[in-house]
Image 1 (tube, rainbow, N blue to C red):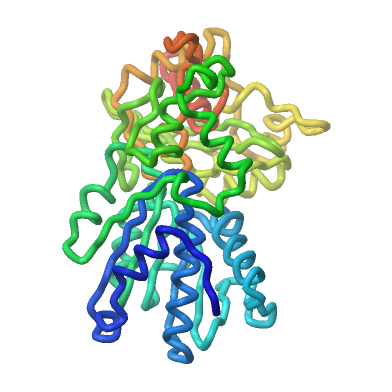
Image 2 (image 1 turned 45 degrees about the vertical axis):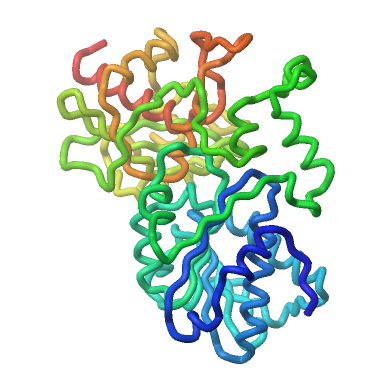
Length: 398
């Protein structure tokens, strides 16, 4: 089997010791780099070599992301593509229903998401957590304590503060490697041009494609935080406190996510948990999803934009027995944002909530933030705003 790889594969092969693995000495590898630097392809190639070297040894390899839906669209797709390129893919070796598994050279490669039931309990010889910036620290620790030989993660360094920096790359058994797209000779030219368009050159600035944050993170592979975040300072928690809960609902229908949040207000502390985050265009399906969250007769304050084709969500959900009302948008989004900003916001960790917290930003004109939010990455925040305003109306009558 002749493997084609880049600098990340070269690093892994140079630093990984099969002798240590055979003696159950654990080894960790962290690949930090920009988009298109070849991290995913090189790790897949490393795992194929690992399987070949451990022919018929029944090694157990786990590949995971925060959600299986994301893994299926990325790593799983790339894995099959690489095997087909080597003429090694065997459909009979692919178990496509849960647990998704591919048998290769007498070893088992499992694919899962941290949102999948039972993904934490089994022992594995190798674990690879793709897109480590998204991964929950607690879930990672559970998996890693059941890992026998090798743990790997990779990521674009899109945050300046993260548990990987504090708790993983500082371990004596872990080695860090950084790479950029400039080191990946296999990157398609279209992707290369797209990433290079972020560089703040005079031409890119003129064309309107320059983005300092995107260039630092995805071009240069440097740690950075997005500028202009509307809610830059929140507190991440493990679970909601006991209290009187109220709920907010933002409709997404077929293309955007429908978001349902569970909210609790204690003094100046605002606690929130994201319960639903997926496109849903059916009132029946949504009502079932809401009830599966344990909500029966509790008040839900929802988006006023509730019509889709022949569906009128609020009316249909009420007819299905849910206690739901439309929010008032009379004072506008800036009023809602201003009220939320008066509180200390505590969010139960969820990758989708984290993604929106990092990317919900003020619009920028000539490098200056203006008082207008960009209408993206806002489903979580809108549902929180609706629920908050609904609670104000119920409590204070305004």
